[in-house]
Length: 316
Image (cartoon, rainbow, N blue to C red; front, top):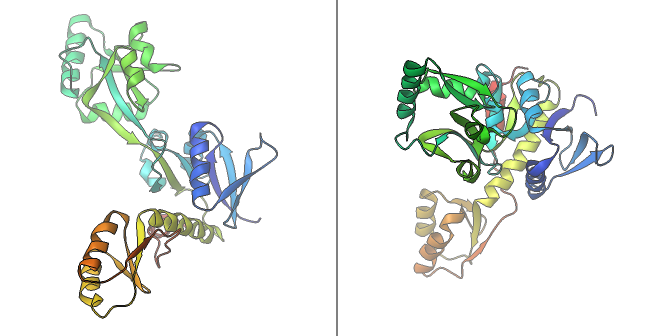
């Protein structure tokens, strides 16, 4: 395959399993080359795409450097890249899995510290009394500095964490932590609490495009094919088709439902899944029926929002 679009996906762990399940739900599958330990794969279902299997952190770096065109990884890793990351990458679709929060957590024994403003006072007092700056253990240096600056916290220093960050306060190597968590249970088990306004980022897996990659040749066309499949499946998850026998009384009811967001289909309507009951009741109340509701597998629209966003931003 000459000049393929390169898609990076996680090579291991729970995120790899979730990505594969999501692709399968979209009617796509990965065929790994080079055996079970191979780091290349073929994406079956959309031509013109080469798949690289990388760690989640390496995917964020490859997107930032323009070494891959598209990638799936956590937003927390993408946001940790230095500088104006939004000038180098474009988030195309949040995928709804791999959810975790990047948070500021302090010892539960700090009973008077519930917010970032409280933390600023603690940091200032510690420096005034002892001449020491408050230590913050974290792997997320860039986001910690940015978040603390926005909240006016300046009297601190970062202790870069190489292991279990949540254990740093108990070990005496830091006063507090900035760490990623899904439920907060591990932080709680280590005697820590999350500040009320201490959520830095609510992260999840993101389908992301690199704005530094070379998008010439057939790569944009391959991206459009992939994005149209993904968007059609996502639309289907949120939609239902209502059908009924033709009825001369249907026009005013159908017009009202279309004004409320439904769209016309042959012998029926496409409605939001959350409005199946409401729309069906409106039809049957007018004596129209029986009304049958079914869920489509894919809903392909004329336009494709993520592709249009990409087209506006890439340099060809």
